[in-house]
Amino acid sequence: MQIKDIDARLTLTGDYEVILTVPRKEQKTVLKLMEDFKDKADKVWEAVISVAKQKRSNTANGKAWLLLGKIAKELSKEQPISAEEIYKEMVPFCSEGTVLIMKDEAVEKHIHLWEHEPKEKIGWSCKILGSRNGYTEVLNYYGSSCFDTVEMHKLLTLIVQECKQLNIETLSPDELERLVQMHGQ
Image (cartoon, rainbow, N blue to C red; front, side, top):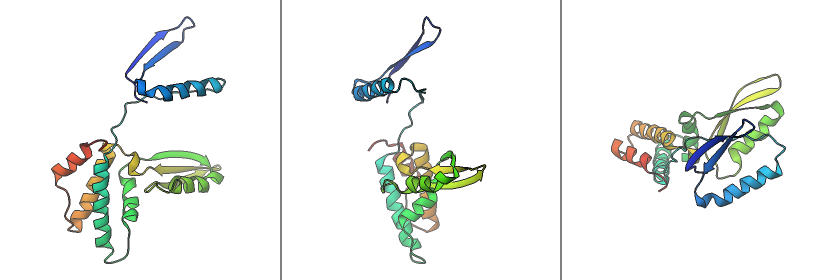
């Protein structure tokens, strides 16, 4: 939810009341949040407010897949490999991922759900970091559909480097920069 303004005031009890101003188009989201809060008022709630990241553009994503296809075609001359397999290998180099700690018995199901549900998730992967006292640390990587412009720039740069090593025609530095700067197109 986008925040247009924020204000706070001290209440008589010594707590702070925080007031967020959001666009009118967020009415349904706000009403749902208020309803959920009332239904679960006995629970402890927390809010996280952060600067919104600029999402990667669909144009940049399309160009990435075009180049990945060319890489796959070239590499398949030696041994069959798909663009998706190449992409899955590259994604962890472009994003930090998120570490989750869970009970050992939950790991297998978590990995399956993270990597395969829904089926449209390509490049979502997990890496087990270690296990101790019945708990396992799992590093989770998101696919590029969740990338911001910085992460998408890293992915495109990695793809372009691979193309150059294989002598595949690719993007000029200006075209690469223009692609990652475009948003929502």
